Amino acid sequence: MPQQHEPDPTHVRDQPAIRTGRRRQWLVPAGLMAGITVGLLVAAHRLETAIPLAGIVATALLYVAMLVVAAAVPTVRTRNLAFAWLMGLIAVVALGSLLLLLLSERAGA
Image 1 (spheres, rainbow, N blue to C red):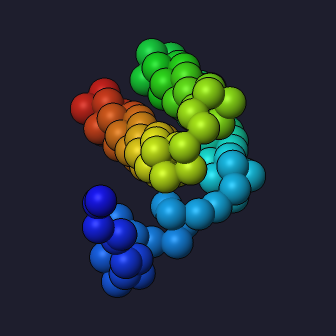
Image 2: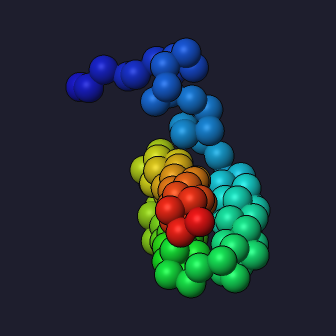
């Protein structure tokens, strides 16, 4: 018989947000982050076209992936781990897009 794992909240992989949690606890903050990212990139669209457009598309696809995970993955832990990774990727896309935009504007100036 397999040994039962005792949860330890001091370990990164045993955080309560990963072990338990509702879909809404992930989708609402991720939606806010995606909305802010898209808003910033739309505002930056006047400076350049390709970088903000790529960032907007990537952010939208990552959030759609979160919605698919919310509907398709029944296991709480697996679903929440996927949510954490996807939300982190949304943040990376936002930061990367804005940094690339800054670098391209500095190079063009």
